[in-house]
Image (cartoon, rainbow, N blue to C red; front, top):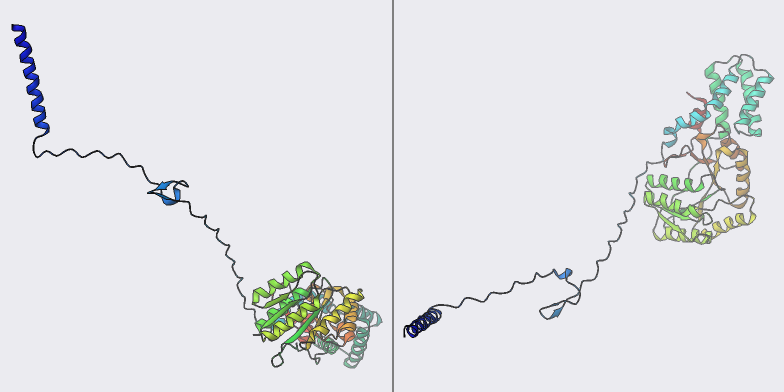
Length: 388
């Protein structure tokens, strides 16, 4: 009996506990706990998502790769060259260094108390060694002999004056050394630059362009030396530095065609001067010399060739004279540009080349710098030879 009573008590307690739990669960005013959201997966940036991954029902793809940045081409800075006026005076010291031995030697010989035949032979030899030429040397020595006899005794100043007068007379300061680079109405002046390889022809062309730009002129350059690979590039560099247009053609192309196009460009752009650089033709190659004549004829279909400058290396001496004579037979040379005059004691070539060709030296190169090309001044030249 006691056993049944114990079981009943246990059942009753369990029933009460169960009823209490249900009451607490369904008690009015209690809200159900919100469901716990699963953690969201981190989203990748648009550009880092794998190709084909779905996001909200849409398929995203990577953007096309960015184009590489194009290299920035920096235009060369345009230089403002100094004007040509007064250049030879500024460069006189370079002439004096190279020519002073020649001048001092002559002054010393003429200052001797007794001028016998041996001394006059030495004077003659000094002049010939300086490339004055045999003919001009004999003329000069005869004139000096006559004036020395008239003077009798000679002071150093009188000797210097005698020598200065004779050198100037042979160089002929009265020759017209004007560079014809002025335009004719709507047409530019055309300068044709000729000479053999190695004389500094292309460099002289570039320096002349700088000089004209420094004088306020607008210039077009024609790279008609199509046979030398670096010539057109070299001229292009010269032109870019001063803002001058350069007309060029394919390597090995027709030089006359380039010269024609350069002249046409000059007319179109209303420039003052067109300078045409030609190939460094060997004076022994008849065919090449004929082509130089063709270049000149083709230019003259569009404009007048106002200046034909022959570039000579002053250090080559009498060999340069032979070159000058052959070129003069092909084109009408109007002036000489003597390069490297500061690097030789043979300045007498100024006298001999003028005498042989009958044309003046108009330009001289007195250094390696871009502005070392100067209009030739006879008096400055002679004074540099004789010193102060």
